[in-house]
Image (cartoon, rainbow, N blue to C red; front, side):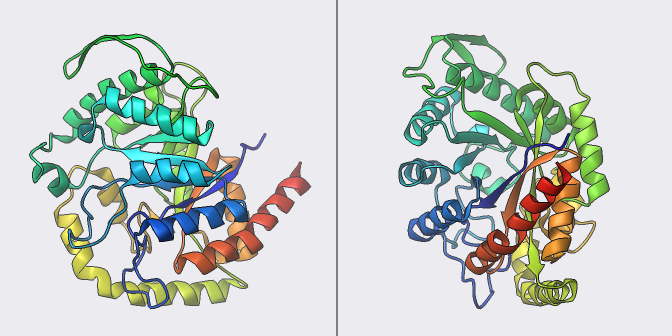
Length: 352
């Protein structure tokens, strides 16, 4: 039986998820733009959005950036249906504080909130702040304790925890979650440490876009690991270029690649400031792509029919949530909702 299938969009917290030089898509990370984007996405039928987290912009600290947790709280108050997933780097916020924030946004949104645990990879925002940047596996060891505390507190439990990094005594938060047992926990990362932590503590494993066989291998690996609770679910990021024909889509992709040539110096600085142990950048180096977090590597490029069929192929191996990027954002978010989503739903109904 096919998995459930939902579509989401990356909120423009960073102003753009592709070139910062596109003439029809200037980078704009303002609350006004993000609010308008996500309210329109909800009206178009998108069911989820991801608010990525950085404190300083990885493309340069002269670039504007929306703070994602206050942004998520504000979006919770101006939307009514769309799921709001807010990323968090555990080193930035103590787990009892974060759990309280999460429960508040869950309450404002009436049960539509998700936490996306992300292992930090951009060194300057942590090193320059004085927080420090531990080694890769040490960050995951910290994150394992951190998410255990957050899960328990957001589930309404009184928490006693004695670990290497945290010592918590009889801590309980009220009010608890009025709408479900606790907010959904998403977790990404491709390293062994990330996969193990996802299987142990996440509800949804969030994958960067990759070719079909690589995604299938990731799903099989994480799904077979020992786990408490119900089976883990899977989401994937992807950059979409969908047009009336495959040839039109390839022409558009070529134009996006040409525009992105202007971003080469920025990308080089970004990679130079990244943790060399971050598997995401090793995977990204395998091929040219448009977009972040795998971008066009998932091959959602082609005619409306081609893209719909590829989405259903990913869904058949377990991908439930497709978190999408576009450029220009507004026009292509509408185009996908008008032409691709109906095709996907029609093909689903025909196969049922």
